[in-house]
Image (cartoon, rainbow, N blue to C red; front, side, top):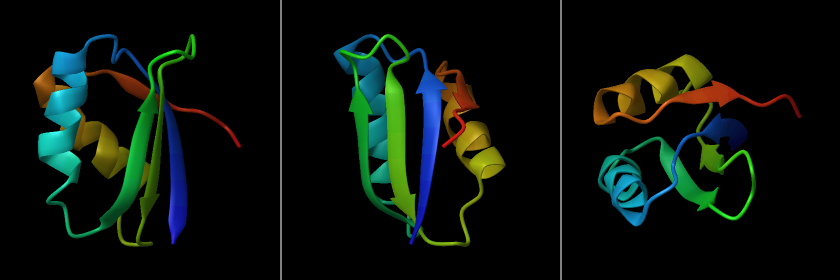
Length: 72
């Protein structure tokens, strides 16, 4: 498993629901979460090695969610 960590603009439950629709049925995504209490609204994804950071960004961008990779 690969852990991907992003800074996002997920500040509403609606945006979090959008992520749920995207990630809950994605074959390369295991466990994921958004820390809406953190100033960076951190998105953490446990994924297979087949899912890249750029792919995650491309998946969520059309839903009005911006994100950028946070270094480990």
